[in-house]
Length: 313
Image 1 (tube, rainbow, N blue to C red):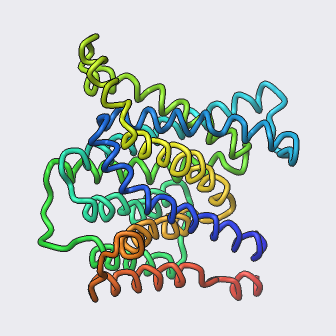
Image 2: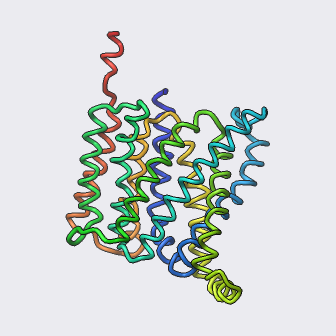
Image 3: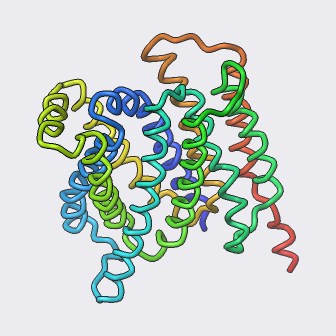
């Protein structure tokens, strides 16, 4: 992959992390307002619907060379969107329920970001080997995330275990994207994954958040009508889903999944910085040290290793 294209894709993933970092606030408030399952379902459907006019516009302005034409290509696109949608549903659902059950946002960010450890480990089973710099970067990043996110003693509760399962699902999501992104149109696959995620999410939303009864639906609808709920839903749907996850699919193409996971772990840094800039929250020396370690880990992961050896061969 050319260096300029690699840099562009890395910057896209950093922008993704920025959008997701700010979205933690929307997820907490929105999940409390309309229920965790309904929030995930509606925001995913909003994200998928928001991409439909984008796809139509891109087809007119800059048609993708990966636009499916044959039945085989369409089948591959649908399969990629289906697999991504299922993993996204599982990951976002476990994350949202973990937050809903009371796991603090900082701990939730740390446990979710544990996918940076899982991605290179799972990648070994798919014959995706990492350089020594990436493995060291992962260890440094975990230390940085701990300093950044964990303020008190570290102990696991039920909500935290759900967040660990969430990190496994997101690690698998990254690997599924790594497999399909070179083969299909990224924006179309992103649109399909949101619609799949949103439709599946309606099932637990109906039984849990709406209490599977007409009275429960009416009560839930009254809460949904509040402006506070829609502010969170629109941000999480259009920006976090529609923009963020689409940028992830486009930005991941050609990058090693372990490097991509390190870049996206910056969402924890951006969530803290957003609180400092927007909410005027102070940053402790511990948090600044965690941010510094994360940035150092990402820079280390970008160092090219093995090139001299390859040239000699």
